[in-house]
Image 1 (spheres, each protein chain N blue to C red):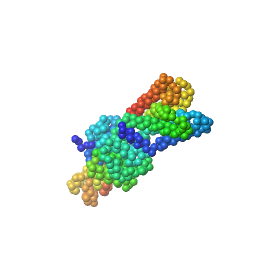
Image 2: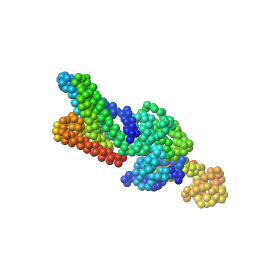
Image 3: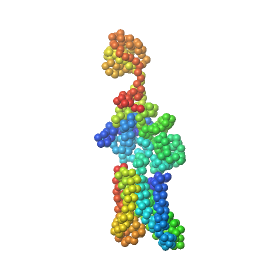
Image 4: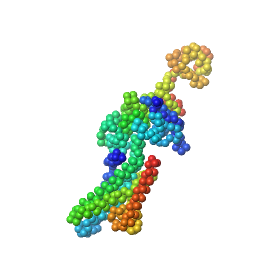
Length: 243
Length: 307
């Protein structure tokens, strides 16, 4: 498994999708900052509300950007062995295809968490400029916890899309489109206090602590995300059997 | 143990109602180069894929080292190097990076295995060029480098000279020959180019429309490729009698009711004609012929021939 994980990281070298992800993260973060500074008063941004930028950025990144790019990267990673025709080389080694898929999903999980960690660093540094005097260790750890949990949550929420797209033998860009619609729909689901605990994208906010939730709602959100992971597992197993 | 490294018995592959490989019995001997010759779409790649276990077998069997690959993958694959169809590699990585991944996944122990394999096929080690920028010839060479990376006993190469320039083809031919003669590798190679197979192979299998039409050694085939005197006469039995008694001809064959082939081309044709005419046999035509291998293949594949 160690070698498979090493190989998966190697395969991502010079990948345009990684650059695309970083660009999308930074672009949205800048966009949220510009939108915030032009619509809020200077007091609100620089003095009045510590954590404003970190809060807004994670919401918009989760609704608009990161589920789509993580789904795209995941589907690409799963599809690429067939697309690049390397699957025959791997079979002739022979590589255990279940372990190969597992390695890909582990790398994607780490990537999802790292993407949110990168976003956290970016927003925290901005907050340091905006509210240096008001930042505390508690704020740092609260937001770090929120961002990392969202990284984990997004991975589970989009995992069925990552598994279904290669299963249906569709182009991996379909994952981007499907995940974008899926995550954007979260905006409407968030308006209902009941639905937001059950819809996977908004369930992420319930778990991360962005929403104030009861223990029961948190459990529901946790189970929904777990169900997403299980669904992905079922399709990935079917995919392995078919390959 | 048999000296056959690869053996198929009644190997058949069907897609729906279409039979793409039909009851193929193929025998690859240890240390030999076996050339599988056939036009594009004849079934060469499918046979190789079935031997390697990359596609399912409809009926019959394929054995490598006396065993079915299915269920013995871990024991057999490390002893085989293969390149099937177009070489598949990660386009965003260099040749060296690609081979390093496959070497590590294989557990190749030699530390300089990648460097050596690249040297053998004439590709630079640690070059910065990524695979997507490779020419077809370079891709092909990298495919071969991947096949020999772990020093396998058997090589299965599907059209390895595809996309190579004439110098590259000659180099590849020399390299494959060297692997067999100096390193004792058993090689199964496919091609649609007759001259390639003729120059390389010890044994040959001719496949057409999924059927193995002929399997023999090159030496046997070359016998069929010799010069002969072609005689077309009005009375074949009487001609044979004269040839045997007057000219002591033993090496001949009767083609049809009017045609005889005499394989002793040193005979005096003028004298034969004279004697036959004197015996009241009409000589319709006579002359020295030389069937090329290509003529032979054209004949057995039903006239369409092979490049």
